[in-house]
Length: 362
Image 1 (cartoon, rainbow, N blue to C red):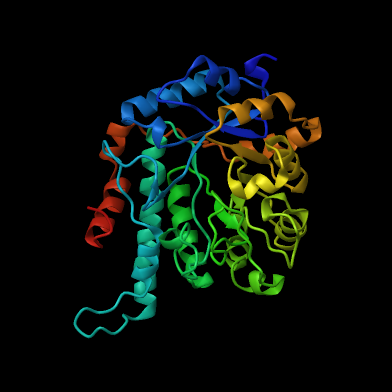
Image 2: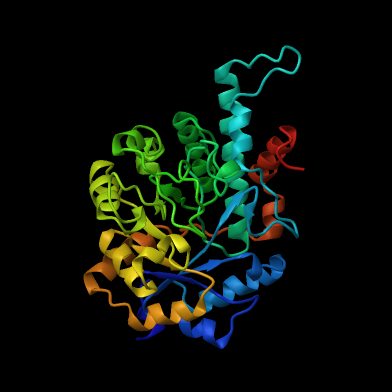
């Protein structure tokens, strides 16, 4: 197949180092590949990152270049001019900031407005800096609620309150949108209650469906059309389904698609994580995820498993066309300013100034 006629496939995979190897190129050119996800090991400085993304796009202009870049402890690029953004919990705390002299909470509408403006500024800076280096998309925001139980989520969450989580995520998403980037709510329906870390264990959440829908899933329902992508949790909710949410037709088709009316892209979480091991093999995991309703599956940190997936996964033409149509909606449609041009942009300077004034960034 000529690369100019290719459409994005359902596999999102990573690359090994700071520049493309022959093996990376082979995988990216595979017709099942639709995205490349970058990690900290792929970033040395802005110039190198920009060159790497340019090389990827020369191979396949249709692949979506993504990254996990939330702020706080999950931010892959944080040196050489990148703004080290705050953990999202800082924005939730700003919502309920106390007056220094009286120690009483400020007027709730005032503190809410300040927190929402800060969230929009964070989203704008995050997206603008990444896009200036050729990255199309970030897997953010985290919509999990902070129950104080999950160490892997922790300060990545905005709040325990689903209403505050919704309002701040919507504001962050608006900042992303203003800089030309789509968004991805994660980890549906919620990873905040399960204590185990799905990277190294299989988390279980024993709560009933209605409890989860009335609490954890509310931000997904309220964000509605402004949510462009969703990543389900590698968590088993045994009162709902025996399969983890990312492999569950009940969660992805019946609840997310039908009940909540979500029309955007559904990405699986990384199939190399322990939480996905219930599937038995990476190919079986990808089959289950796609069958359950995912449009794209991630395979990270295991080139051997990526090769296994590309050589053995069977995807129908109908499914691939449907996935490609959804994935294409995540691709930026406006050309981003280069890094030096961005530094002089009024919106960018205003956003940084606001976060500095609030002591959220240095």
